[in-house]
Image (cartoon, rainbow, N blue to C red; front, side):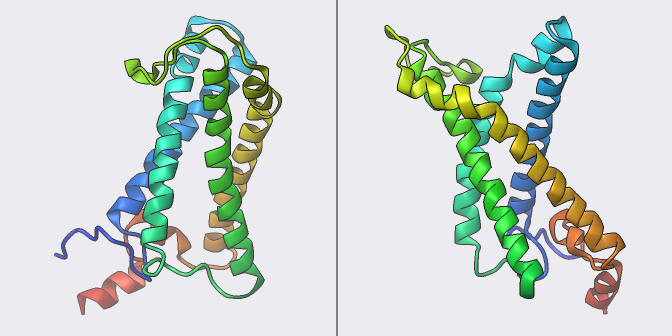
Length: 193
């Protein structure tokens, strides 16, 4: 039995990349589910429970996207390739758009939180104290774009998932296994030999 693959290699992503990917996917699912429940149900105890953590989880996601971006840059030479041709370029563009929005959406919300003049303590950790506010130029961008860009991010993530299905069902390749952490069956048998 082989040891744990911590680092990425050209065949699949290592444990660090997979934990960041799937952990952030779970946190984003929580965020979007909470907002969907709020839109569908309105104010309720369930909504309060799910949306109550929105700003704290958003702050955590901003930190994780920075960590994930740094890890991705440090691992860039070892990672699986996106492929050649237009599909590879489309994959790169899609990933860059997702990463960009994963950074911009919570950054706008954090700027709004600061500009509101209210104290901000995600998970009870004080990040900044309150002051006489609000500051319009800090709150306006998030008021105008945070929600719209967040739903755009969700649409891109849905496209990302759809492309995984296309790879598996139509193109019959094993791109999912790169991030799932296990080699495809044929490769697993070849590695044992």
